[in-house]
Length: 121
Image 1 (cartoon, rainbow, N blue to C red):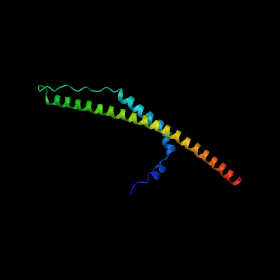
Image 2: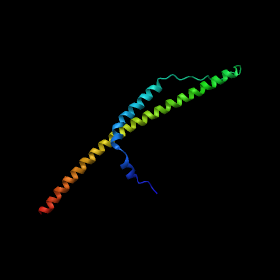
Image 3: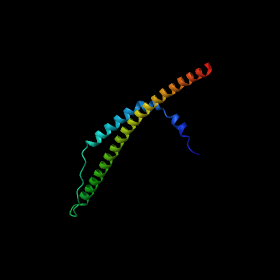
Image 4: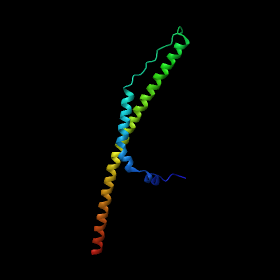
């Protein structure tokens, strides 16, 4: 059975979404700022066979840490971009909502005027 999208969209608390959009974008910007200023650990280019097993394990862990930091940086960059897009989308939806309200009002006024003109004739 397909999802009735209109009923799903009606259940979304749009006023909450619109009011919280700037908070989401600001949180994403703070996350991006916090993650982007952290130092990344540069992994060693190659492990020398003369190193002890403990030193090789540390070098491997440093390489994995650097990889995880890079993934976190990429993820936070994506989150920031999505939050910015969400903010822009919310602004455009709000403008469209206001335009639809104006058009609905104009349609009602024109409908009443047409009905009065029809009844007067």
